[in-house]
Length: 338
Image 1 (cartoon, one colour):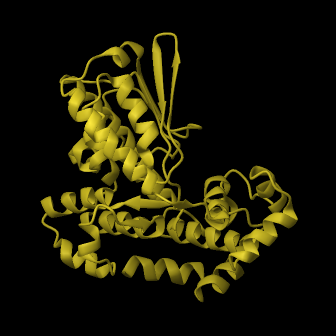
Image 2 (image 1 turned 90 degrees about the vertical axis):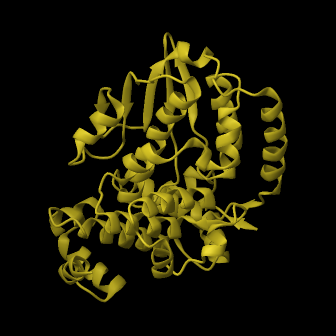
């Protein structure tokens, strides 16, 4: 059984292709992450989101490129998504391509399906992706929306300029790259990650449309989708929910249980059956979030304590020392020297 929150190898290979083009020794890169090259080359293999996090964060470090998500999206061909990419570009119209993506997205990622909505003359793609750390969330959001534009351009054989692009993360330091890539109004700190475009594009026929090929690829996609036996781990689901909600508030176990449509006692029992607890998952998420924020020296430790919903900085200091054996300052210094 596969666990929730897994990524297919074509996604990893897209990152490795970017590294190779930048002159990075990919074998050494994988070795540092204790990853098996043979597994990476096997499209049927999948990896847990935590490993994908390490790949993305190390790639940012190696390339010294904070705008990695944008650049990866620019330089990744739709066909790099493997079967799903070929299936999308062989569809009859843009609307059909979206329908294919929504139906078969699990082939490449266990994220929740994205959504397409239409209001008047505007169509909006709300893009969802596996959530984890703020850095990785930003990379995935950038990559996804750039890929949406790339898909549109390659499928239509012409330029595609969005009407509006929205991101959930804070305004980054490299906004000029956003403006160059999208050539559209860009908004940050938005409730959802979205791209808005003229609705008439949905009716456009695709330059690579191929009915016979599309039918054959659909048969294979149905086969692969049927072979995916995805086990929904309540522990994984709770961790993901906490990562997504922590900066808004510090959810209580009752609130989390209510989100999943169960009571507190049932949630405790389910987590115990998976050898964890709500407090352990909350600490795990807070620790992961804290480590990521501490890497940014411009963020005061007191601010991090507040963002992680600690009652006072001293409580955060004690908790971080318990989690890592280091004080926040020691960890920050150690991370800077790594």
